[in-house]
Length: 186
Image (cartoon, rainbow, N blue to C red; front, side):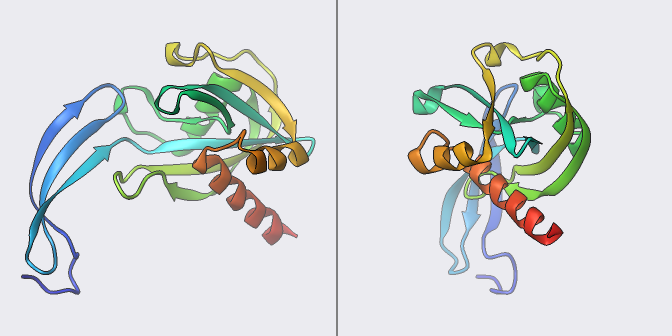
């Protein structure tokens, strides 16, 4: 047993179970505070960026077919650097926005960071507000070939959350950070 003031779950060993260009999965043998042992599966992914592209009191959203949930849903542009590499979150935000929508942002403001799936991954999602937008051509990755981009008024965006056309938890949480930012700014 170990002191409860320490980290409550202690890693005893780890092994790589699977890896590809986007993530790796490891299985950790752990010890709980009561001394019992168990297994914890962890998905390791590099940190990501999500961009709230605000223009004319509305947002630029993207949608694509999401294989695990067998459907298309609108969301804020988001993603990570290729090949599981890490880098500057602001650079990544500019890259994701341009790649997925073609938009270039004159201003990129940090709104905060969120854990994407903290029950199974330590990945951090850095959330940015993009303004002073300039249109351009998207440069999507092969996995994004079916992606669509469209602007929505804020009122329609909120309705889309209510009626289930937006179900991405990061998009909803990011919008909360934006609302808090707007409230603080007066």
